[in-house]
Image (cartoon, rainbow, N blue to C red; front, side, top):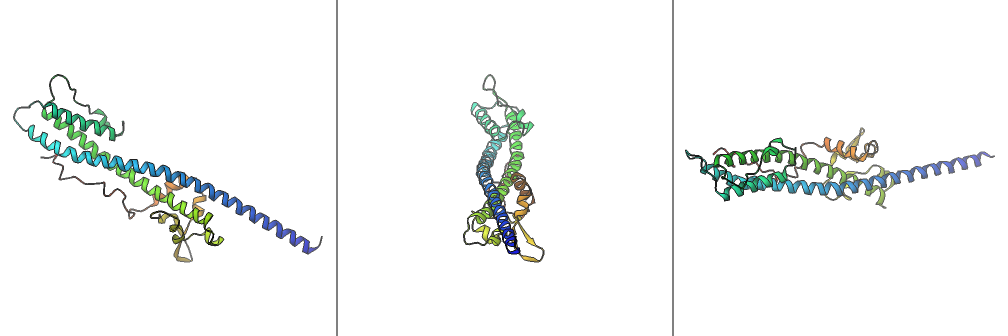
Length: 258
């Protein structure tokens, strides 16, 4: 066999290997895109549910403020008076709504709170006051926890959307070169992403601190779920708080200490 034939066969084998690796890489990227889309769908639903819960929590805290203040006025007499049926019904409605928002075993103190039994003597105003105060304290703790949950979901969703954007660019941008697809810039990923991208998905080269590139190596080094958790945990406090408009601080306004 001549040297030219040997070189030709070696070249063909090399090209075949490169094509196989390229096909395997595209298959892996397609699988990752499918995982990212699935994650976006689930996280989006969970985020909408979490924000809805947080909104209802704030509304219930606001509603219970006025109720607490009025009962507090009625409870300040020298004699402990029985509440009216209307007050008892409204107190029970607040308790019931709060229990729907706070999951069982999430807050042991909420689990211990019971609605007033609508039979026999009506509860005393001081008892209603203490119970509603306890409910409000539980709701405030729940709001803090729920805000953290919503923020964590939002960070994960942003990571998933950024990954999907990078993968869409890699797989479907016909104008990009193979080299650019392997190192997607922020601008390229942003063009294929809805909303704001997560900058912690990107990295810099040691010899080029002016540019950021999507870090496929990190994505490939772990499962997709682990990647979401790891990058979301790295996200700094300077990220926009998606629930800021929901997290209303009522301290000094709720009238609990009247």
